[in-house]
Amino acid sequence: MRAPYPLLMALLAVVLLSGCGHKLLAKHEAFPQMYKEKPLAILALPPINESTAAEARDYYATTIAEPLSMCGYYVFPLEVTSEVLAAEGFHDTEAMTAIPLQKFREHFGADAVLYSTIREWDTNYYVIGGNVTVSAEFVLKSTDTGEELWRYDGRVVVDTSDNSGGGGLVGLGIKLIATAIKTATTDYVPVARQVNGIALYTLPYGRYHQSHAKDGDMVVVDETRSRKKS
Amino acid sequence: MKERLLLLAVMVVMVSGCVERTSMYYWENYSNSLYHVKKDGTPEARLEHEKTLLAIIAKAEAKGVKPPPGVCCELGFHYLGIGKKEEAVKYFDMEQTAFPESAQLVAALKKKALAPSEETL
Image 1 (cartoon, each protein chain N blue to C red):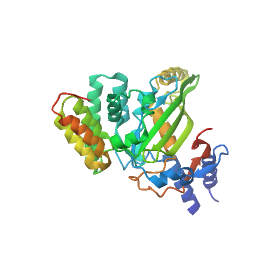
Image 2 (spheres, rainbow over the protein chains, first blue to last red):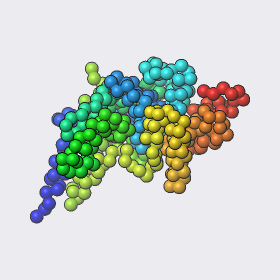
Image 3 (cartoon, rainbow over the protein chains, first blue to last red):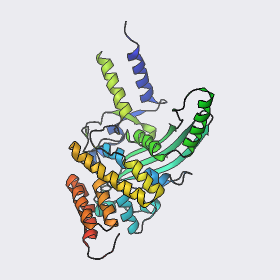
Image 4 (cartoon, rainbow over the protein chains, first blue to last red):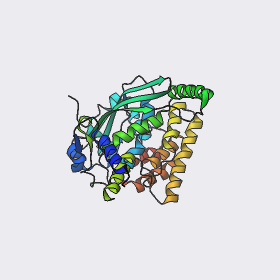
C-alpha cells in the first residue's frame, strides 16, 4: 500500500500555488523586461511609510539588502547611499522618489532602483496569540529605460504568538503576558524578513545566482500582485 | 517515486524561496546589529555594528566566498565618518575588488576620503 503523502503533497502544492483562484504566471510572462535588461546593481531606497508604525521605515531598510543579495543582485549599502543622498539634500524618501532615474545610474552606477511602500504595519494582540499584518508594495525600475521591471504588491500576516511557554494555568498566564509583550514590542527584523521572503520569491534571479536566466518558466507569480492596480 | 521526488523538490523550492541559500553569502547578524544602531543610536551600538561588519568579512574569508554586497563599503564609510581614512580606503577597495559594479560609488567615496580638507560627508 502506498503512503498518502504524495497525494497530500500534491494537494498542498496546488493550494500553495493556486491561492484563491488567481491566475498564475511564469516569471518571464510577468516580468519580460527583467529578462531583457538583466540588471545587476540595485539601489534600494528606504521605504515610504504610510503605516501607523512610525519606525517601520528605518527598521525595514535594515533588512532588504540581505534577501536581495541572496537573489543574485549587487545591492548598494543603504547606509551609505542614504547618507550620500542626504548630503545632496534628499532627506526623506518622498524627495528621493522624485529624483530622475538616470541620476542613479550617473552617480552610483545603479542598473535599477527599488522603490518600496509600507502601507500597513498593524500589530494585533488577542487572548491566545498575536500577529502583525504588513502590506507593502515593491517596484523595481530600470535606470536605463525607465521601465518597470518587477513589482510585488501584497499583504502578509505574521504570527507573533509566543510558543515557548510551559503548560498549565501558570504557564498560560506567563504565555499571555509574553505574547502581549512580544507583540507590543515585536522586533521588526523577523517580521520584515518574512515579508521580504514572500515578496522576493517572484523576483527573477540576478546574475550572481546560479539559476540566473534559467528561472523564466517558474510559475509562481500571482497576476494580481504583479500588476499595477488601476 | 519519481513524482514524489519531484513534488518534494517543488515543496522545498517553494518553502525556501531565494532567501535561504546559505552558501552564497554569510550575512551573520547584520540586520539585527544595524537595527540596534537605528533603534538606540548609541556609540556602543555603532561599535557593535562595526564588529559585526568585521565578523562578516572574516567569515567570508574563512569560507572562501565573497563578502556580501555593500558590507565592505559600509564599513569603509563608517571608518570615514570617524576619521580613519586609511582603513576607509582599504575597505572601499575591497568592495570594488569583490564587486566591480561598485566602482562608481567607491570612486566618489575615495575622493572624499583622500581629500585634504577635514570636510566629511
